Image (tube, rainbow, N blue to C red; front, side, top):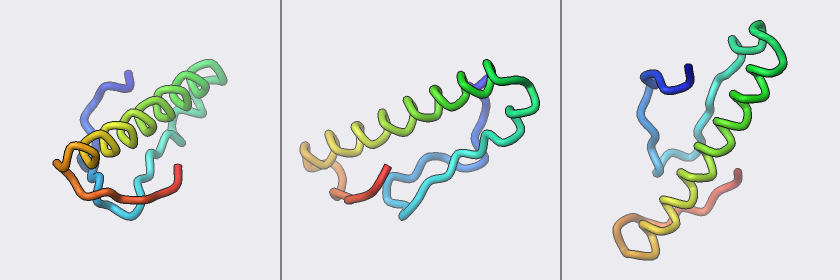
Length: 66
């Protein structure tokens, strides 16, 4: 359900990233909670991957807020 194509690929150099799960809310609280957990995990995994790439010199460090 959550592993479909994105409208845009993740860009670690972007100043902000938004994940819109608003349409899932009509399907019920359990599905909404699962979507929120999935997007949280995806977001933090992306931040961690960018930090590791920066430490290895493969990407520019980009400070940000989560």
